[in-house]
Amino acid sequence: MPRSVRSDAPAPSTRGRIVFLDTLRGLTILSMVGFHFMFDYVYVYGFSAPWFADALIQNVWRCSISWVFIALAGLMTSFSRNNLKRAAVYGAAALAVFLATTLTDLTTPINFGILYCMAACTLVFCVVRPALAACGSPLLPVALIALFLALNNVHHQAYPVPYLAWLGFPDAAFSSGDYYPLVPYAFLYLAFAWVGMRVRRYPAWMRRDYCRPLTVIGKHSLLIYLAHQVVIVIGFELTLIALG
Image 1 (cartoon, rainbow, N blue to C red):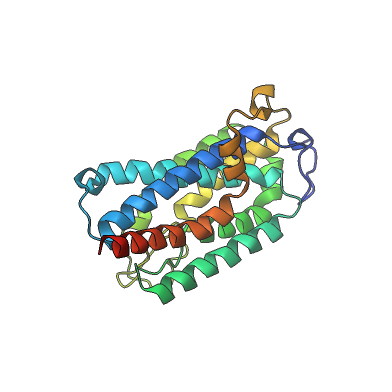
Image 2: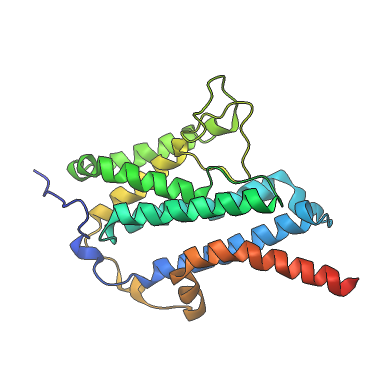
């Protein structure tokens, strides 16, 4: 029978920092800042960048950011001493983003963005963790990722039932500047949470610091996420003032 896993105890193999995960998160944060800079450049301030307006480029770039964030968040459940507290931090940050985007009126308010997604997925993980711990088959994460890919377009459609946008079934009146509901992203999150629970030893190369600046950025990713849009907007405004 599988060994029982305490609800908030880190797996033995995950003790000690896995520096590569911080570095990867730091690289992804920089990519996100670049994406949002270009978004503001084109859609908020009206500058021309035809290459960025291409839907394929935007979708691939956006997915390369959000999918990595959600996968890393799932993987990090095994490192957390208190995933309920972690979900609360994500939720508070999501609320702050919603209030900021609502009050500034620069873009469409963010109702169920990626921080909401990580908060909700972490709560789901806390509920289903015993079931994940009990299933040792590698087919489970494969099936979860397959579900994630198969349902990846569900939330891009409109449905006649209101008040289910948080789950992944928005109605025609719903709008959000950033949208990452439980379906399908919880499946990606849980797949990597399962992987994190099963890893018994990370390779030595993942504990090395290959790029210190990226690693530092990755360790402060939530703060940078919350502050970067403010910095970008201030930068644009100051530039416009300087140009007259």
